[in-house]
Length: 100
Image 1 (cartoon, rainbow, N blue to C red):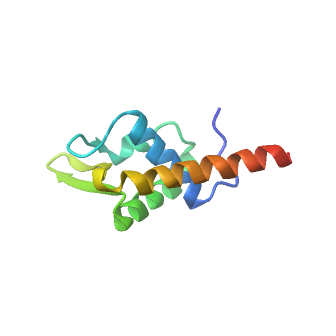
Image 2: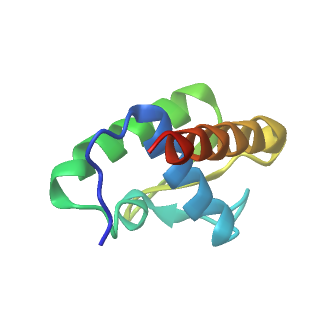
């Protein structure tokens, strides 16, 4: 089971970006925001959606309004910045695991 206790916005951003990248949702291929929050506990969905909004504002993911709801995909021009967030988060997670 996935635990969200103590996760900050940066970690939610990394979770969302990893999910988009793993599913190859880049550029023209898009998915619903609700699909990105699947698998998270109900109490964490609001924080995850806030992280999605921040990623859109930052330009890392692109919004795509459709007739059937809001969709998003990774901005292909920001892949390098995206990779730095993922690696930074993995590095900080490794440090936290060593301390425990």
